[in-house]
Length: 293
Image (cartoon, rainbow, N blue to C red):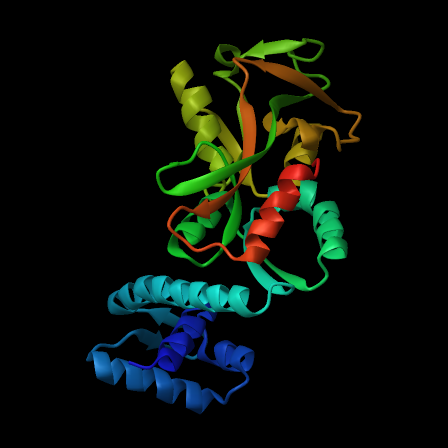
């Protein structure tokens, strides 16, 4: 098996399209198809089901993709290690960042980091929090930003943010005017909630509602905090958002209330424990730990 064949297969799996993968790789579609077919012949299995519009992985393809992520991650580690030995003033960091977190804290931090270290390239990919954690573990990203708690036997954790989650209600809701609401009072309420791909979905559901003895009544799910707050402003339900997001809201029809027990939103930069971290990655971690968010 050639690494080039595996890299081509991984690109096709990523885009779910031979055509799009070929465009991204700047090679012809027939050349890409030939390389993947050669890999399939060597393995004796079909890896991709090809249709006119999409290219989906077979069960065998999913296995190759899973191992391919690990192999490409190790290759990236090797390149980073060699780069650190030969060139200490330049670097590249692959970072996984949940959209919620990215829009809140990172534009300003990234700008300051770039001014301080203009020769370090930041490659940012936005995934939901759960996928960021999985991708750091599999080696796709050198660094990620995630919501705690996490398994610290697998990850090194560098805390960067800790703040309260708040309850948002419409100004005409019966809770309006209260300073605090107990979780038990929320049993019959309808919620605008986070999609499953977000770590907050499980954290709030399991450690807040389920612990209190009930499942939340979820009316809508969203991945956009501004949409969630606008739904509350339209009196469609309640939601729970971090204090930093609440500070950005301008809707006059919303009231923000403390929760009891308190739910803490704790963020951290994470790396995989047994992975080599480049000088560029270490520089970024040191920078963000010193930079107030």
